[in-house]
Length: 531
Image (cartoon, rainbow, N blue to C red):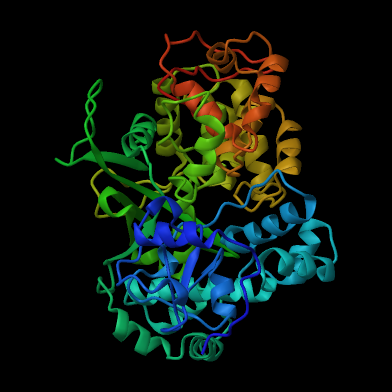
């Protein structure tokens, strides 16, 4: 039975109970409700009968509830909740603990064996003893307990939503063996994985050539049309497709309701590469996104899920962001920062987009895909290419790139990035160290502050990126210098990436091509970013 200790981090219990009573999706993932009479913990959006107030305990993190002996609800499924934000401007210990949690949450940050306390401490430049102390002070559990909960919830999602064999579920979720996987489930949830699958059901029959489908939660408000419209304007031929309810690409100048994005992707895990496709569509009524993934990516499904969440910025906390930005940007409360499923791809597109229009950048990117991308068979019309690998671009001749219309300066920048990524010297994902990665990018030829900040915004998922030298941004803010833009932005920290997006989307005349100080920058319009 669950123990009776108080939660480590104080919560406003009455406010939590009210949010649970009204099933308020804005708080989804911000806390979990544990019910002492049942031993179950739930999301605030759970539709079960409202428990009595005196039987409820509230935790900020699922790991805290599980450490107290509570089991996840099979109906609302806590593994579907958006992750809690891990950015802060508070004291150093809290920032360090949140950064450690962010590294644990990011599958791309680690090799196949997964993170350990010593590895995380080394990444953060502290001793593992110090890390454990501040982590337990912040979360009420050890880094190992937090990681175990993350793995168990990832596995629980695969068990409930797919028919993957249990061996594959165990390995994909980060367990070293099926024996350890089964033992962890019995210890934490009181039943074995097969029983959990029977209790929860699975919506999709797996099998050769069939798609795997999972659900991903997010917090409202969410401007789905703005996000899908952003990707539609930048879709590279062969790699991406955004379609409407009639299956067609949205017409130029129209404002339809977009319903689906599909694309190919490749995920390298150690020496092995997994290639396939995914499709994403919104279920706004349930505050969910439905993700379909080719079975060829089953072995790396948690990584695919993490990248899909990043692509659509599903873990953003609108209440915190809007509290900081609404007064200055009242029309952007539903906007999110578009991400990427491949940091190298995003960096290439950022370079290609310098000083040209969205349409021109899309043309160059499509030519690059056609020339150097590997063919792939998919059941989705128009998806037949993978984005080129770093090795392919690094090995391309200047003449071959020039024939695509890529000028010499861009060639140099593209190949410099490709060589660094191929050699493992440059990591472009959400688990990378932001300051050192920005510095490393700016040391490369043709990469200045604008491009580095843009890559940090979208590939590193840094919510405080701010390309202060961007002329269009300065115009939207009513200033004329990068210094003035930076000074104006201080009140928006740590959410300046969202402020940038809102400024670029703010109703105003289309600005002229922007030329940032000491660097060629993309043409930015009020429709959004170029790359």
